[in-house]
Amino acid sequence: MKKFTIIVLVILLAAAGVGTYMYLGGGRQPQTLEQPASSSENPVATNEVIMQNTAFNPKTITIKKGTLVTWTNQDADLHDVISDQTDGPRSALLGKGESYSFTFTKAGTYTYLCQPHAGMTGTVIVTE
Image (cartoon, rainbow, N blue to C red; front, side, top):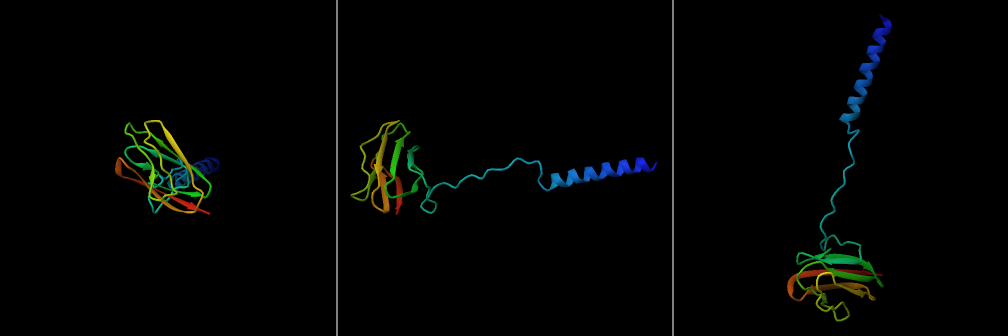
């Protein structure tokens, strides 16, 4: 009878351990957190910008001086990249699938827009 009691006790303790493990989150798949959308408050470190849905994505990027940035149009509409600064990027109109690249040689903040879509704006922050 003692042997039976010990076996039952071991089974109960094991079951309690598994239950506690599951309660505390064991066995769950790790969750990935979505990154917040890019904004001037959350600049993204990348050198590629996509033109899609009449927007630049990411809207704001941060790069180091000397970095080549490439804009690629994935919209059916024509888009361009026109900087507010005279020493910033200035592209021709780009059709779907076309790209434009520009190397930023001076530190600073460069704002730009798409001339056909005045509300389509972006920013490049260039650091030393």
